[in-house]
Length: 231
Image (cartoon, rainbow, N blue to C red; front, top):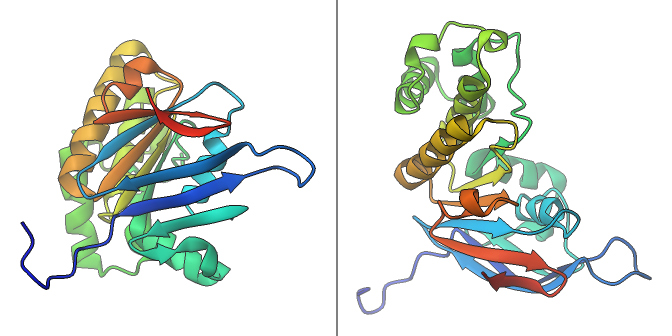
């Protein structure tokens, strides 16, 4: 129970009456979205192809602006920021895991994972310590000096998860992170992602069309033209 007079910490992510359309003369892709995500929560968002899952993800990351409503990250309204301020907030507070990985093949595992810390200008000793710590957490520390092009699909996905979490973001966004993996690697990746979000990040959202993947989250919502609804 909070102390009397204490100010409650803002939600990691809050969506208020969110809607988006592709053009003014077309109906909304979705409308009326209202959710709140607090520290330690891990949410799955499901939906058929074309319902706007990627569009929603872009709004959550501040890469696009809603037509109505607000996206608040750590209490900050993303659409009220200019491009530079939004980039800085995203760089500090958001971690991304993509289906296509976006791991750079000509860099080593260690160099790939350290990239967010480089962008945040973390000092070399701290950068090295946190990178190796995260590589150990996802089980690929022995591969630190290997080039990403030499890894299996499952190993590359572990690199992607480590990179998304190494700067200790408040919000982790995972977009179909197991779509290119075999069932065994997918199950391992989903378990790893959930465990690491819980241990290292504020909160996480998994975007997926897979019921099996979604069931690794704390709760599941389904996206359609009417918004987000419990499964």
